Image (cartoon, rainbow, N blue to C red; front, side, top):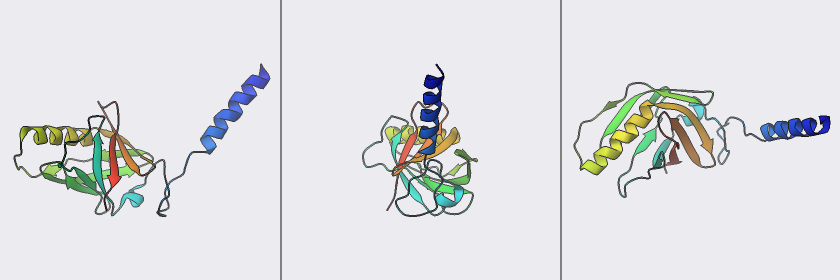
Length: 147
């Protein structure tokens, strides 16, 4: 019984040891939890809206133009606001948005995207993807880096 317990502990520790650390900004380096500094100056394209996919030829983006700030396209309109990132968490402040009208399907996608950002709780990197986990969504928002 002790041998089995020891093996279990060793396997558990080994799996934790293989987890990647935080980014140092080197190209191609993967991280488990991006920092506010590592996101600074980056822009991302939303590829998957919590498992719902995205409309063709309608791009939603997320940019981190300066410390503590976020901006982007919500599908039809532009938005901007504050953001806090740290220790695997992400919180968006109130987002201001333009008020242009688009076709109903685009407006529906936009509403879901903004709601997901408002409910954001966790952030992670997995390979080339930025993942944002939000209240009420079974799957994360999945972004790829723009440009």
